[in-house]
Length: 62
Picture: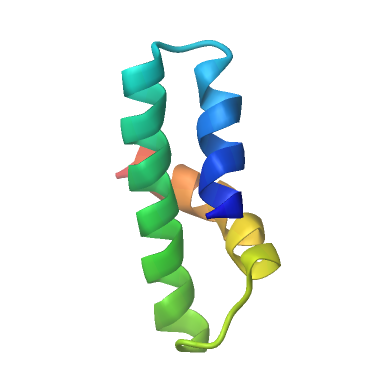
């Protein structure tokens, strides 16, 4: 929840609130899925926050 809240807050600074919420949720989900594949089910919010740039890069490049 903390990572998602921070991500949505950051995105809402320059975007429509609905778009920021939708994009933040999607990016958070992709980061979690990617992290789960790499390390398994045991990770914390800090690990998830560190994964966000990688998830965004993957989304941009695909």
